[in-house]
Image 1 (cartoon, one colour):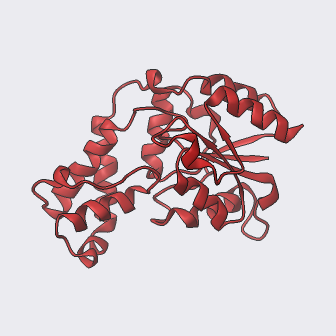
Image 2 (cartoon, rainbow, N blue to C red):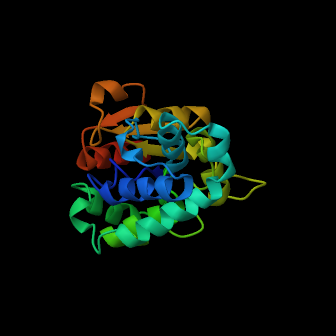
Image 3 (cartoon, rainbow, N blue to C red):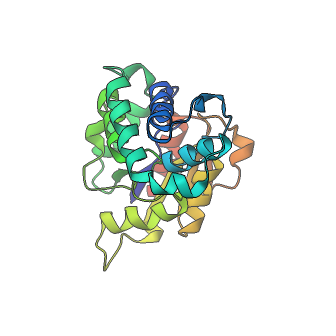
Length: 228
């Protein structure tokens, strides 16, 4: 089985301060927005590109102008995050996640990968500095740097886990995330999804998932049942 993990709110908790600051740095530096932090947008479950676009438009920037410099924006966010990211994010690993990932690494039938709205270099740096990056091999997964629309990421992750001619099978793929947008992403590709209520959404808001776990310990039980 291929398990596609979200990062923020799923693997890591309350680890987004430097990331948000990097997005705001890039919006100011690339687009000249004087106070992008004043804009209120919903970020949970969205890609870095979607978040940046939403803030920029809320600040009065035409969407066409955002698109014109989207590549520069991505580069600037990554550069700013590299500067701002704390030396360690170990204390932000969600309870039970280390044990869960260690167990999956020992299971020859399980493959762990990522499906996240983070730009890939940011995702990799977060997990490396949290001490769990080794569970997610390079060249796998799907990221906000692959597509601005999260619903497009499932096929990308499956293609990388298999081949372009023979993607990893849908029926053997599960997305694990903490928002309704993770659920929508799974449904867009016909995938199973397990929601985990460790992010900003309570279990009731995640009821459209195939299963809902209160935390990583409960998630481990669900995954054991699914594989057994």
